[in-house]
Image 1 (tube, rainbow, N blue to C red):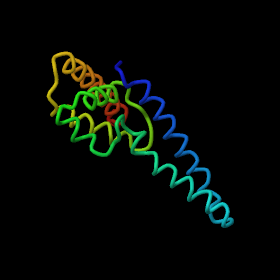
Image 2 (image 1 turned 120 degrees about the vertical axis):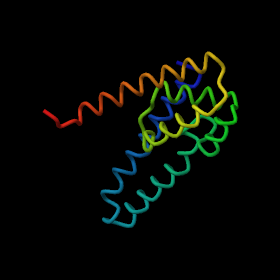
Image 3 (image 1 turned 180 degrees about the vertical axis):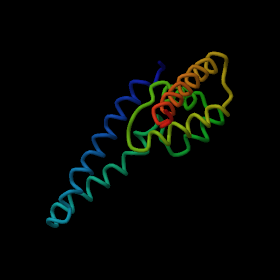
Image 4 (image 1 turned 90 degrees about the vertical axis):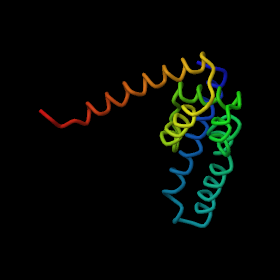
Length: 136
């Protein structure tokens, strides 16, 4: 795993904490004005932090930085793909990061890392497909 793996893992945990707070407060938002405000604050905090937590260097503009071959963005993308974090919308991000990283200029070591991700992803998709097949 690479340079950004720890940061990505910590940030995913923080996003999950922020999302859990929304999920908890939404249940009571209609009970009082105070509880509605608590829910609104949870939502505001989540949205204020999501961009910076979702991807090292910020999610906004990340895909362009990856395709342009910006070294930090490419390294962050490879780490993201390798550790495959789980948080709100991370599955969609994984597919986007994967698609953009395939288009990025990669050196041989980076290409080997991407190839390993692609092999693992193909196995994952095959396993999911086999689990959902209903044929006897």
